[in-house]
Length: 282
Image (tube, rainbow, N blue to C red; front, side):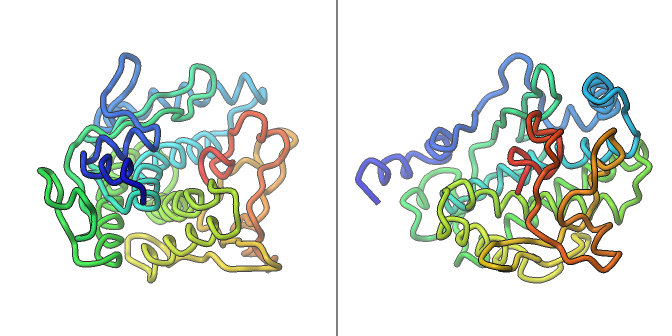
């Protein structure tokens, strides 16, 4: 760790956010998660309209699945990025997170952390600063992330459940996918096998067991020299014209086919539409 990085870490959470290209405010056109939770039907309407323009069809299950994955991407991505790169966990309360939706595809293309407090390790140079709360070790820090993410996801399940055709088990399966995908993705972004392995290690640390209502421990495993995972939830992209089931879809697993490394069908790669494309997770 060089002197400049040490000094920035000592500055507190704002330095971490700058390094990770996360905002610390709510610009015009951005939405707090707490506000989004009160009007998820409007987002679903916009998403359905986008599907209709792109594919001439907007199956309700597909729109539902995309909204669930894209919303949960917000707290999962914020938590995973800060844990992986900074060994810090901020508040993940809906009141303390915000996002911006793309002008075309209504996907969160910008994220903001609005609080100033964070949990960190005793060795963090900012551990004695205002707003820092130290925990004893990495396992305890992972437990903080898991608890804060689960609390946010519970708010989402409560808000969206009455609007969705999906039951609580399906929504929590999607929440589990979002968290593990975000942790894995934080490592994969490094572009090397060792960086991806570090993301896998974070997923194993945070999801070392099943913690209900999350539906699974980490399912990441090495197959033929590539990391892969068993997804918990279907994105229903196969209902779109010309699309097929994604690799690793739980529907194929139920038919006895082995899971594999997720890869988005070609029709969705250009628009990053699928919940399992690179912008939303591995």
